[in-house]
Image (tube, rainbow, N blue to C red; front, side):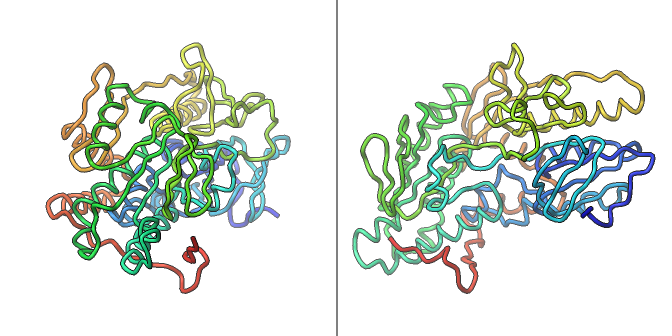
Amino acid sequence: MKISNIPESGAKERVVIIGGGFAGLEMAKKISKKYYQVVLIDKNNYYQFQPLFYQVATAGLEPSSISYPLRKMFQNQKDFHVRMCEAKRIVPEEKKVETNIGYLTYDHLVIATGCDTNYFGNDSLKESTFALKSVSESLLIRNRLLLSLEEALSAKDKDEFGELFSFVVIGGGATGVELAGALADMKKGILPKDYPELDFKKMQIHLVDAAPRLLAAMSEKSSEKVKETLTHRGVTLHQGIHVEGYDKPFVKLSDGKQIRSRNVFWVAGVTPKMIPGIEETAYQRNRLLIDEYLKVKGYDTIYALGDAALLLTDETPKGHPQVAQVALQMAQRLAKNLNNRKKNRTQEPFNYKDKGSLATIGRNAAVADLGKFHFGGRIAWLLWLFVHIMSIVGMRNRVSVLVDWAWNYFNYDLSLRLFIRPKKSKMYQDEP
């Protein structure tokens, strides 16, 4: 059954974009509706700003501040359509995408599906730990955090109290570092005012990373700065150690040690989302192989962007990093090439320009790698704030985030620590 209420493209070619993240949204904005009919499909009807998920999880921001309705973004554009659905299969020989609400034909298909959480083959961790790849998962972590504090007030014994008052972050990339840093800030300046009965000197924050250094994608200087700052703020680091399993309440580490906790947050890695229908030869390391014009190997009208794409060159033998800047620049190049195609202009190959990397560690602390310059501290933190404010979609959202950050900075507090859950849910029946 064909997806209804999407008119035939007529003289215009139809571009179908799968995924409304960084790459998909940028592609949808930049491609000309004068030349193409555009259909954007996503399992949500909103865009979510992934770099700030951890702030929703730690009650620093409202979910609505980092989310934006896709339809509102494009409500004044003709020949643009949004459908909330999930792509199930691609049928290249028929130029068709099958979804859970029907099928859709295309002239050009753009795959920008992003990534899922990678559990490195240990699927049991998927059910027992908390991931951080969506707004809804951010809210689950927020609830888990607040529930643990409430239950700690009435813990029956020392062991139960220790499990509830211990927080384990698995993964030493940007998300893991930022989440651990935010928890340390809450421990110092916010939670003691909410829970004066609890001794927050006993609160434990563990950061477990299989890599030998934190923020392995950044410079060694930045890694050392992060290590120093987190340690100073009371975070216990376990570096070069991986998690072998989690048998509640014990987190089993590869060095033989165990951490007793009911709060385990898995942010250790990502894996691309694969859609059936593309030949296996087009994949490598679960990512779609693309050429310099962003076409998927073996296909003339299928393109891949961002985390789903792998471009191997002499300069990038391992592909590009799975970060927002790569996704945005790929989308901009593809949109420009498709627009130029209609103007009979020459298409240009993709050439990534690294604008640097930023990561925050908490209040007044961040690290920056900008070309040959590597620095940290308050200046890096202010730069991080500015870049993220400017990257948020929607003026209202920018103002909302700026106000929340300013209020939190000067008052060491935000009134967002609300524990909201369904009336009955197994998610909150936490049995040790």
